[in-house]
Amino acid sequence: MKILDGKMLSSKIEVQIQKEVEFLNQNFIYPTLAVILVGDDPASASYVKMKSKACERVGMNTLTFAMPSNTEEEILLEKIHELNIDNKIDGILVQLPLPKHIDSSKILEAICPSKDVDGFHSLNVGRATLGFECFIPATPLGVMHLLSEYAIELRGKDCVVVGASNIVGKPLATLLLNAGATVSVCHIDTKDVSIYTKMADIVFVAVGKPNLITQEMIKEGAIVVDIGINRLSDGRLVGDVDFENVAPKCSYITPVPGGVGPMTIATLLQNTLQSAKTKLKR
Image (cartoon, rainbow, N blue to C red; front, side):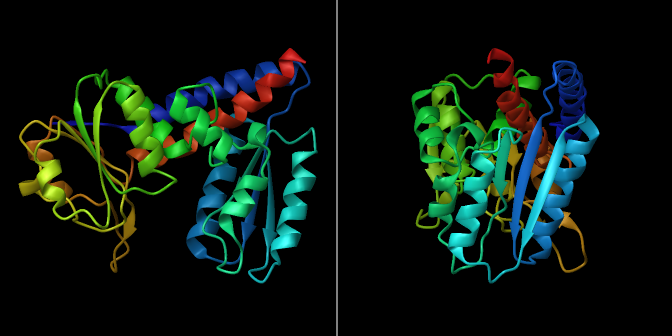
């Protein structure tokens, strides 16, 4: 059993990004990520802080716009429009989830596709489906980078994605399909998830439920990518996989923390850098 070390790979990626940022700075281009945080959800605030620190590590600018939870939808849309037309801003990220009175889909569609570094705009989603160049959501892209780093071939493999969210499950399934894998997607209405996981060469799980995937659900030698993150009552962070019992059966497995999480941040930085680099062509 080998560990898919996202922490190690993300550090390598950040070193490369830092070099490219320095090059852009020499050309008077200063990559800048704008993050909008609505409300006072502790987890969201923590994620925003992590993203800001990552930007600092690689020399990127980050601007955080914190808004109260009762912010009107129109006010948020005005802020997004303001950032859309600001040439100094390369990436715009609205931290999810948003308060219930705000239509998340409407907000994500308001972000200019060329600054949509989260890859959630329908234009980017469509281009990703067709395999065209575009911004791809950070977590699925991070997973693909991790598999590539360990030379894990996807073509012809039987893969199952457990969890069908627009943020992780669906875009990840698209990337796997485009890479030549045979993909099954399980969700809340799937009758028996184990029917699919027992047959899979690679299992990806992103649900948010501790110990959802047990050793009986995985075949010997399978690869398991745990994208879930859950905080237990004792403060520990765990994924969706019963790591202790599942790991011995795996050829490769991601830890939580230290697996996919760091890769999500690294690929968000990559997307922001990609946006900033378009200024070199102007």
